[in-house]
Length: 575
Image (tube, rainbow, N blue to C red; front, side):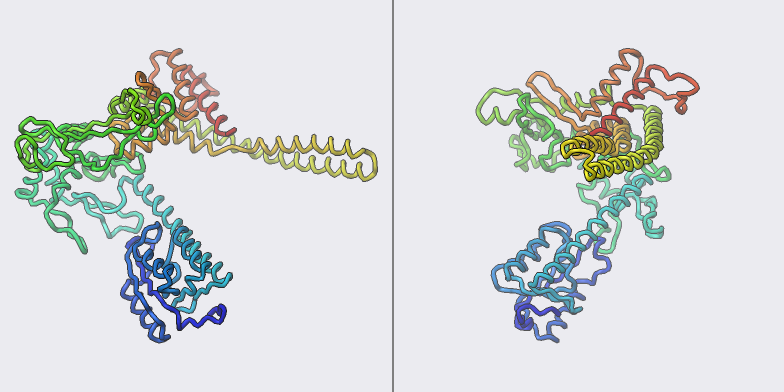
């Protein structure tokens, strides 16, 4: 145990801190009851003065733990000056909370961090360094686990399954190998859900009526789990079922579309899924309850000012009265409760306006969100939608370019090694000439500057970024952008806009769309292709098999596409 200014650790005022997260990071950590028992036994054996006990079940990966904040306030106020914890990494797994702990140790308010295994920390500079190092390792461990989880989720999505609990109608197969577990079909529930879709697609059932049928006739309940489940579904679950594209055979994750495992059944097709969404948007309350909008931050005025969203939510009652429903529970005209309406029609309008003009009471014109989406979809459909065959062809050529560059780099490395040796030899010769007075200081410096410039040029030419991944990402966008802009969630649409590097300008007359330089280059080159070949449509074009540059000349379409690929590769490599 470290000794710091003859500190008598038995007379300190301790806070017992126990924490366990429900997340994967804590699978090997003792339960709160076990931690508390061990710490209390340790305190009794060593006759420690315990002034408070704090226990919480929350991840320390992010800031915002009530128990931790309470403990820090006790220490900051002087009511406590020491912490007793099962392991130091229970205190923090993020840099902000860790910095708070070190700061209180710097201020001599937190004098001691004690664990039962004799790994303890005082306010000495060495101990502060050690506790900072342990908390940093804890943070690194959490980051590594987070990265592994994300990679695992992506791998699972590529296999056709979402992560987490399977949606109603499917069951997680716990018998499979970890990381390779599949879904089983819950025949009874899936049959009931199929019945609900068939009924809803007739257009004669509201979500409320569907819920009553599901509960009273089908007795549809949730899967019984260890602590929850087994009860009849809630009304909100009807909306979740109807809106979930998984029953149509696909899903979105991280802004990308994935196809459901081909071995799992589809209850409806994609066209029927879109019809369900259309019926929901026109007749029933939207699922979103927050004011998160698609184009906030992406659209600006002609002067570059912020365009804010104006959101209006209205309801048409059974009595045909239309009113804003957000703060109401009953129709202001007929008095009927909103939840009991037979055929309510919910309307949602989002307009964007120049906030600066509104603040100074200037006249302004707003633009409807649906118009922006329509223009973006048209832009993407005309310029950035490829057929699968054409996208595959592009990726194949990108891979060939990458392989050529790798082969070229071997020669370049050899040449660089030779050039560097030659430069060093010439510098050594210059030094010898200066030493032997065969050249003056001025001549030596001039010659040395010339050599350094040549060497610097050689180094500068070795820069560049991962153009191979970036170009493949652009091609992937051509396959998914339109679908997500039309049918994706708000966040999925915002992810697409970010990946496109989109900036939208509204001058109160026309809407202009500006994208990342590489995207703009592709759009301009496709326009050039269409001028030469008016029949060309990337979304319909079927590419030739392979790249046959040596045996048969490529037509104008492929020549232009090869030019774009070469130009964008050069653009990325020189940025």
